[in-house]
Length: 356
Image 1 (cartoon, rainbow, N blue to C red):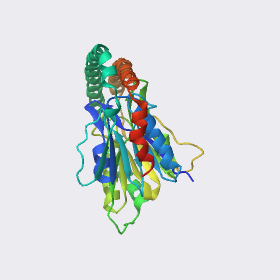
Image 2 (image 1 turned 90 degrees about the vertical axis):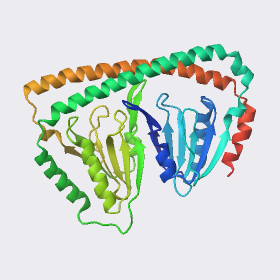
Image 3 (image 1 turned 180 degrees about the vertical axis):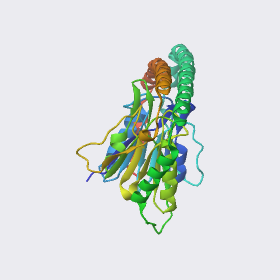
Image 4 (image 1 turned 60 degrees about the vertical axis):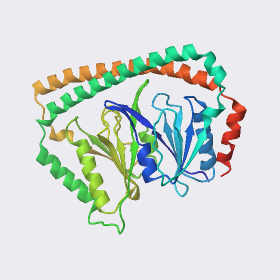
């Protein structure tokens, strides 16, 4: 019987730069790490997909981690318990090996015909220059969007009924936990909810929550305490012995968008822009946690916010445009690297991964 397949993004292109959680995954979850060292290409993604099929068909639960630039491309694969194996394509990711963990390096760069790459050297140089330019402009636009988002939060905070919200949160926590206290230490893990891609904001909420029985959808404006509530809930759950999975935001690297409590088959998440979701009538465990009702905006504030939202969407639109240009150049780079790959040598080097 096949195991469960879950999809995440491996990295998020946030307003503070690139955020990935592979370091936490290596330190807290993986027992064995395979580093697929090599140039940027698409062959490694095909390998990760095949490895996923291989382990999943043996009954293992697996997690695919998508490339933020190419949604249909994988950059990592995690085989969950009892294997706890991480396969990571480390071409665009810097990882300091954890010497306490079994780490095997697969030198895929040795499968490349260097002469064929040199024949495309001038084109690769110009593509690299273009990528650097678009990369800087993308993150400048994202930093601007985050700053505008912060201004949006300032407008809403001043009109919040914090006492009313705190009372609602207290009642919710009591309903969720009661007097429960597990006789073990809670374990904390980390994932990413989504990221801004060349196709716009993307997330994997449906995949992440596919096997949960209770889903709580938070509705509220920016700056009204959503992320703070989620952090507080995570701390409370962990203090009671529950395992906690924090799922981080793809715009603000310091913000949490979801908390999952696997032992309760429960999650709660920010279901507002850019990942708007509503309860599914076919799932009886879905409900809304309404924070917006505690925010009483004046007409003047609503007009100010409307102007801020326009600026925010414009900055995001600029970021998407630059990411598309970056991806066009990056795709050509990867295709050149793929064309220089000695396929027979590649297959020989990775064959053992399916036999261990």
